[in-house]
Length: 414
Image 1 (cartoon, rainbow, N blue to C red):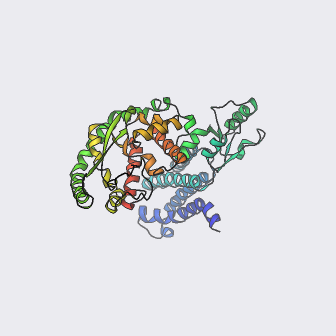
Image 2: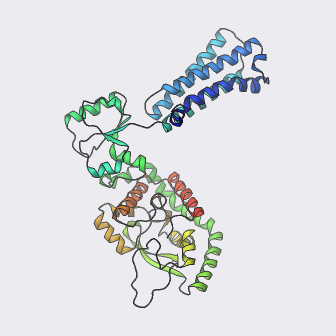
Image 3: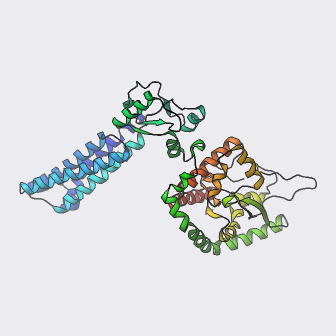
């Protein structure tokens, strides 16, 4: 029952709107709460505009194609239907209300847009992938919701989207299948593009440095991102400095000196820089070797250190790195030099993450958190490369919002 109601929700929304609109039009336009008390001509005018809303809504329920195509279709159809109504009313010299006709047009646009978006959000898209050039690794990245198309004789109309690995050689039968799919209105796209859309990650085998320079939005954002960083740090400094002083005093009292932790990290262009943090770990005992990575539940982290990490207070001294130009507020997290060298050997595209300035927070941090093994590291790199490819103010604001939520929850810190 719940599934049925979920599928029928757009139709239920339309029915509810059509039922309430005559009352709303009567009350707001004619100041009459009882629509049946209206003069006969105006009652007919309310009825005709409500009928136009219904026709537009019914079209929005059945229109097909890509989401952009559907929206364009319902908008054009809505204007056409209301224009036809307007011309008919004028031609027949019927009584009419300009405010009602304008409001009815806006209502149709909003309701139809909402129905199209709601249908797209509720329905399960049928996605198939062509087996030519398909590897088990690529199948893992596209996810379990994609089915393998077993034969080029299958009708493309069985799918909403068809994925192809255009990096591989495609034989003539599957090329013909793809052409037929395009002509039938099915969306045909690169499998790597689908991975980026549904997971926010770049498929590493498909990434190339040209992808960054080819994105005009990313290229233009390089110019003023630095200005945004400096202004943000200056504005946040009056809050950050007192917090650092208080936290530093607490560290000195509970753990002793040093207060700060300094470490060389790999930054923009692969250059080393010294990154600064508030110390959150106890000093090493005699003969104890330092671990390169921080483990979940690491016993070296003190209770105060755990608190500072939980709310990211230990990262505040990196504002100085941002002012110096070593880092940005948002970007891939800088790795320790030895770790970065090992990752670069294991992951050929790893060094591409250095094409943008490292950040205090990043896309990988809010999507995947810390990496404990090689697969998680690869996932993290895939998120970093996605950021490098699509870096923009919109994406930065999204990351900052995600970071703020994580800080408020005190989540994914160690």
